[in-house]
Amino acid sequence: MRLHLVGLIVVVAWVSLLSGSLAEGIPDAELENNIEWFGINLGGGPLMFNLDHDDYYPLAFTRFGPQADLLLFNLNFPGWYLTPLEIHPVFFLGFLGGGTRAGVRLALSDDRRHELRLGSFAGVDGYLYHINTFAPSLVLKPHAQYLFHTSSGSIGVGVDFLLLFHFRDEMLGGDGHTVSVPPVAYGASVYLRWTIGRSAR
Image (cartoon, rainbow, N blue to C red):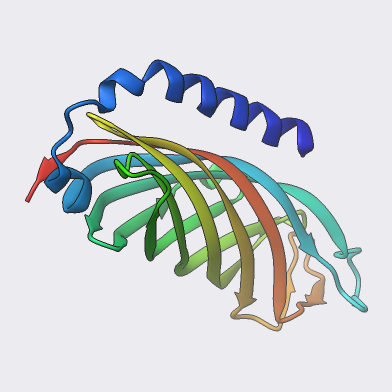
C-alpha cells in the first residue's frame, strides 16, 4: 500500500513538472468555470468486510479492492465542482455501478493551477464477494484530491474513504448456503486522477 502511494506521488510530481509549461496562458475564466469532458480515477486499496459471526462461510476478510472510475462531464465552478456521472464499469474486477461526485475547490497557489478538492461520492454499486454473490450497496466515498491544471485538463492524486451500506441482510452463495451480512463494509483507496477537455463557459 505504501509503495503504491509513493509511486503515484512520484509519477504525478514528474508529470506535473513536465506539464508546467502546458498550464501557462490558461485564462482565469477557464480555471474558474469550465467543463472537463472525460476523466479516470485509477488505483485501489483495502476493503474490510468483517463479521462478528457467519452462518456458513468465513466472510470476515480484508482484500484489495481495485478502483477504475470513468468520470463524465466534470463541471468546475468558482469554489466548487460537480461530476454528475461517475461510472464504475469494472465487472470483471468485482464491482459495477455509479453515482455522482461533488465538493469544494481550494486553491493552493496564486495562479490556481494547484488545487485541493474535498468532497464526497454518492451512488450505488454491486460488489462481488468470494462466495460468487453480488451485494448491492449504497456507497459513500468522502475524498480528498490534489490537482494540477494543464491547458488540456488536469492530473492529480486522490484518496477515497469507502463506506458500503448493504441493501441485504443475507446473501446466498454459489453452493446454496446463506450467510448473514453486516450493515456496513469500509475501506480506503488511493488513485491517480486524469481529466481531459477544457471549455470556457
